[in-house]
Image 1 (tube, rainbow, N blue to C red):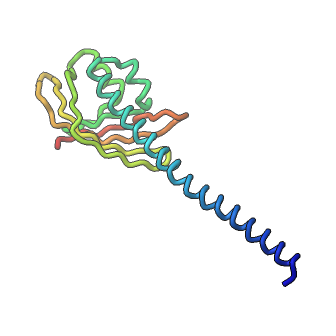
Image 2 (image 1 turned 120 degrees about the vertical axis):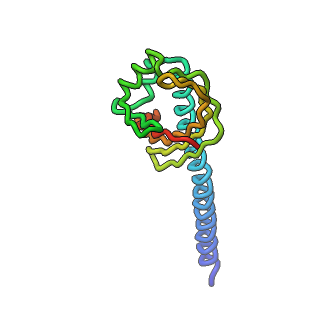
Length: 159
C-alpha cells in the first residue's frame, strides 16, 4: 500500500469509528428515553386513578366527568354494571358516599396509548345504606387521548 492508500484507509476507519460510535450512543440514549416515557405514562395513569378516588370523596362529579369517558361504566362487586350518569346521581345524592381511600397496592400495564390498572384500596364508604371499610380492588382500563389519560371503565371486587 502506498501513502495515499493508507490515508484513504485511515479516513474510512475514522469515519466508521465516528459514525459507528454515534450510532451506538444514539441507540443507548433511546432506551433511557423510552424508559422515561413509560415511567411518565405510568405516573400519569396512576395520577388519574388516584385523582378519581379523591374526586369521589369530594363528590366532584364535574371534575370526575373530565377524566372519565362519556361511556364509562362502573361494575360493582355485585356484578351490577352502572352507567356513569346513574353513578354520578348516586354520588350526588350520597346514596354512595365515599369518606376515604387508602391505597394498598397497584399494578400498571401499558401498551402504547392504552393502560390496564389494578389498584387495591381500603375504602371507607356508605353504599346503599351500608357503611364499611371495603377492601376494594378496581381493575380499570384507560386510554390516552391528546396527551391525557381517560378512564374507560372500572370493575370492582374485593381483595
